[in-house]
Length: 127
Image (cartoon, rainbow, N blue to C red; front, side):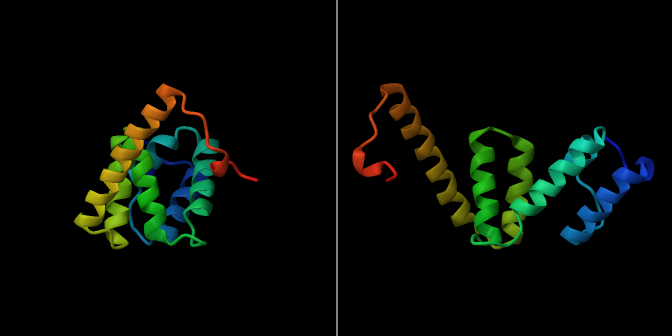
């Protein structure tokens, strides 16, 4: 991991933007690891900054979706990071419990539908 003090000016510029955007005084291990490839670091930061910015979906909803996908993909780091972000944005333990129930149910029914190769109903197809 590349610490701020050891970072190149290019990496420090991204770190500075991360800290300013997130209103924090530290860089997490994900960004420190990506810093070994400054092009990937910048591209990933710019993309996540755009995708997670306020829009039609509120910040809590976006964090909970990110958490759901992270749980499905079994990424412990992303689950921890986005659980913390979702809690800061108002996710309660009850909301987390319901979210994980939905994730579990969706994964189960997705596997059943895929395994049985269920044909898509005409009413579900986009027109």
